[in-house]
Length: 453
Image 1 (cartoon, one colour):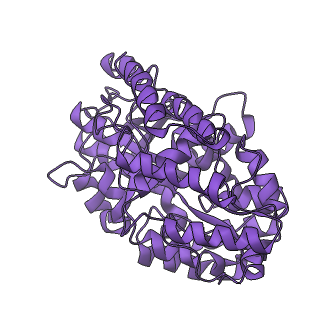
Image 2: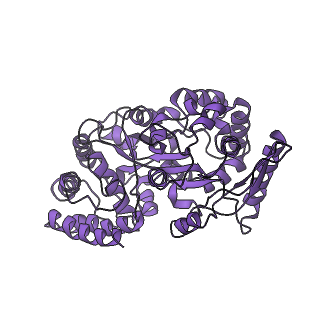
Image 3: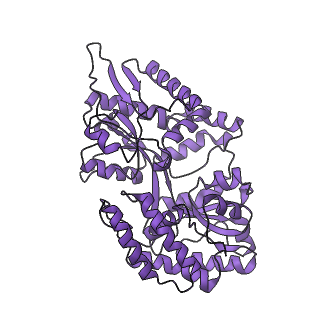
């Protein structure tokens, strides 16, 4: 697999943030007399991305050469929340396509995704996938309706050098929010850096606040997205922690209006000790903003107590609910070939890692895997000669991720919800006397009106 695989597959399969659009009722193709199965595959890059489109088409040709009994018909249809239901109702969805990790449970209830359990078992994929993420694609009878192909979860990103200066152990980052507060105070007292920081603008404040609420045992929406649920103790506790750290401890920065880029700049410059982020934060703060790689550390998402949860996002592939068994099997084979092969095949893994390393790209970055722990470990063994990141610095995150439950983003109007919660977080960090229950009550009423539309 080449470097181009990652750029195209990632662009197609990055949680609901960069997926272009979704579609998928079955094409009317059925197996002809010669045994060939024809399926429509979504997410073909558009003509304004000629290199990505050419690579996608090359992979289609390679798949068809390896599977002469399967004919792929690429279409540009991808996930778009504003059009998906109309496409589904009109029978215009392809046979296989990408959807955000937030969607499977709703699709299952509306019978808009096929049960692909048997096809996964026949292909030998069912046991190869990460069971924690796979659980988000199952119904109450343990049947699978989507294939995870990309995932992330929040953790605690920290500056190992600042930890050492503050007398903290870089190998043992905080696991609870009480420990975060203590560590932040030590960092602030021992250095010129703010101990901790959160995002607050461009919907990122509400996004991270949702993750904090999960880690305190709460939610922001109920399961079907019909009711706002953050006007309660977990959300209050999360905000009170930020309020205390900002105004009593003095461990949050004076600048409270951070987006990902501006916060990343201050973190990379050594002005912040800890932030929330996924393992791919490495790309921004190390590769782009030049934090020395050895200073990057990441642990699990801090918890209020025990293992409450961490926010997760990503992408899954669904199959048209009207697909025949043969079409389901063909769709699963395509998903394995295009999205998962580098984790399952040594030659592909090595070729991909070699090409990435030689191109000077980040290679072997650990993260929340879509395959099981043993398979993921084997993948890193295959590519060991080409890894160019400090893998040991990700160990606390990987160890914590094995135990902390992952909770998907809100299923209904997530970005609007996040925007409303931005204001709440900003107010707490700029107004020393902010009335947290009143803020949450007002925001809850606002969000509920949006969910009810």
